[in-house]
Length: 311
Image 1 (spheres, rainbow, N blue to C red):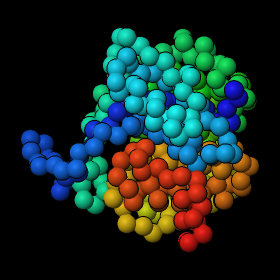
Image 2 (image 1 turned 120 degrees about the vertical axis):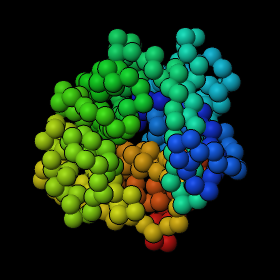
Image 3 (image 1 turned 90 degrees about the vertical axis):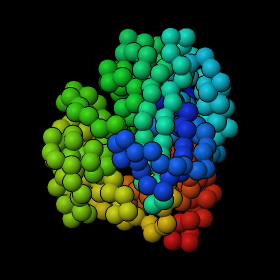
Image 4 (image 1 turned 135 degrees about the vertical axis):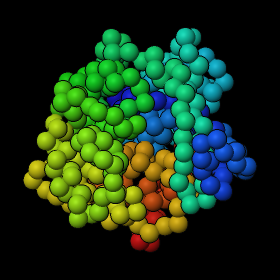
């Protein structure tokens, strides 16, 4: 099976609790509405690509889980979204990754991740997944798996002719060699500042093109700075575009960035122009923040199309 989109990254089981406000250090708060929801940035992107590309593109997930009940749930969730999970392999050395997530009333969250099996994915074994990337139009990556494995997989994906998209989260410094393998870099405001070694600050749509241009100097071929409720800014050295966000009432922003990246990949796999791809990605992310959870919040293709017709 040749996939149009391949996602290499993390698979976590998310334990989500709603709270009135995020706890300060040493503070205990009472939560409500506990849910156990399949997540992990890699799996979220694969699930979103599966849902949003249904009937148009195929999606394959590459990653690691443990031998436990959480692994079964995660793979079943992806399979239900139409994702090929044949390259999700189990290891006995670590349990499946988990994330502990607190979500406050305004939709902001605080997350602690225990990576587990995600962190035994090593660079030397990446070449064994070459067949999973063969025939892919786009390959999606994040930073919840070891950096050396991400770097090796980026290089492999490009060798196989795939266009690479990197979500640099969790934020950390990245080498020029790694960034040179990235076709589209998609940081949010804080991640963009960290990549540039600058203090984290809010970025306006007017400031975003210059910030993205500075990121271009690090090596990627294009940059999309995600600005939350202000939309996003695309720069590739020739074109600079601002795509405004849609106005919605946010309940949980947990998987908004993952949904954005997957929707972007689906649109690009369908040969959509960049401006149209950004609008589709913003719409998918907007629908996702109106719902609680990670994969549970990801809309279907039909839902996004209906949202775009109404907006």
